[in-house]
Amino acid sequence: MSVKYKDYYELLDVDRKASQEEISKAFKKLARKYHPDLNPGDDTAEAKFKEANEAYEVLKDPEKRKKYDALGHNWQAGQDFQPPPGYENMHFNFNSAGGGFGGGAGAGGFSDFFEFIFGGAGAAGGRQGRASGGGFEDMFGRAGFAGGTGFTGGGQSRGQDVEAKLDLTLEEAYRGGTKSLSLSEAGGGAKTLSVNIPKGIKPGQRIRLANQGSPGFGGGSTGDLYLKVNILPHNRFKLEDANIVVDLPLAPWEAATGATVRVPTLDGMVDLKVPAGMCSGQKLRLRGKGLGSGAKQGDLFIRMMVKVPKAETDEVKELWAKLADATGFNPRSF
Image (cartoon, rainbow, N blue to C red; front, top):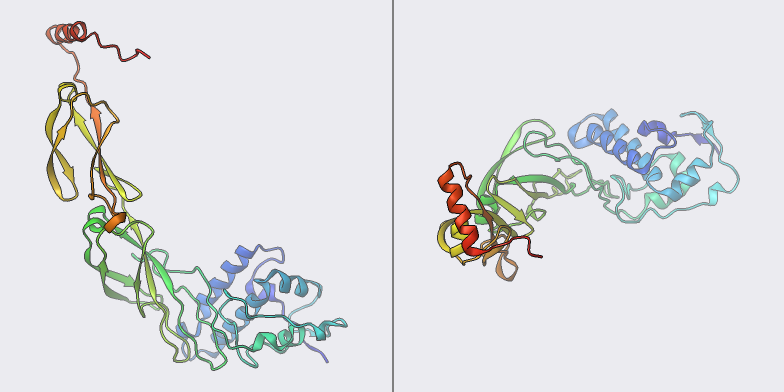
C-alpha cells in the first residue's frame, strides 16, 4: 500500500532544523490565518487549517518528529510513498495534555499518510486540546485572535481561552471599581466591556471574563478572556510587590529636631509625625496603605530624603559653621 507523502515542514513553512519555538510560532500564524471561525464557508481555508494542524501534531512532539524525520528528506509533497518495513506496526499516543488545535480529530480527521505512518491512535479519543500563547498581546489597539480551539470527535469544540494585558494606574488598582474597555477583535470591529477591578489588585493577577475569548467551533462554547494586570509607572509612588514607597523631602532642621509634615498617600494627604534624628533612606510605615487585601495587604513606606540648602551667602556659611562647632557632629566617625 502507498499513500501520498506529506512534507510537514513545508506545510508549516519552516526549515527542517527549526526549533520547537519556531514551529509553534509558524503554526499559530497559520492557525490565525486559516481558522474556520475566521473564514466561514471557505473550504480551502479549512483544508489548510487541518493540514497545518496535522503537521503541528507531529512536529511539536520530539519523539514523533524523530520518527517522521527518519523517513528521510528526499520525498516531495504529493509523491507516492511506501513506508519502510515495520512502520505499519508503529502506534503513538496523541492524548497528552497541551496539544495543538487538532487533538482528537475523529476518524478521518488526519490524512491517510498520517494514519498509515503513525497508526490510528491520533484519530481517537475525542479530546479537546488547547494551545497556549497566541494573540491579544495588547488589547489596546492590537488585540488579535489567539487560536486554540480543538476539533473533537463530534466536530464541536470549546473556544480558546485568551489573555490580554490590562494597563491600570496605581490609583485604579488601589481603589478598584468599574472600568470600561474597548477591545479590538480579530475579525474586525470592536466591542466595549465593563470590567470590575477588585480593590487592591496587584501586578500579574488576572481577571476572568467568561465567554469573551475565542468562539467555539461547530457550535462549541466560547472561551474565556483573562486580563493580566499591568500597573503603569507613577510619577510619585513606587510599587514594591504589594508595598508602596514615596519619598519625603525634609529640611535638615526637620530631620534633626523632628516635625509634623504633610505626606501624600493614595487616599490623599495625611499628617505624619517625623521623629527627631531621621536620616536620608530611613523609612516610616503606614500600615494597610498598599495593594492587596486582608492579611496580605501591603503598606505605604515613607522614605526620608534630607535636602540641604546651598550656603550662598557669608551669613549662611557662618551659621552652618556655628552649627558644626556646637554639635561636634562627624558623619564619618566609623
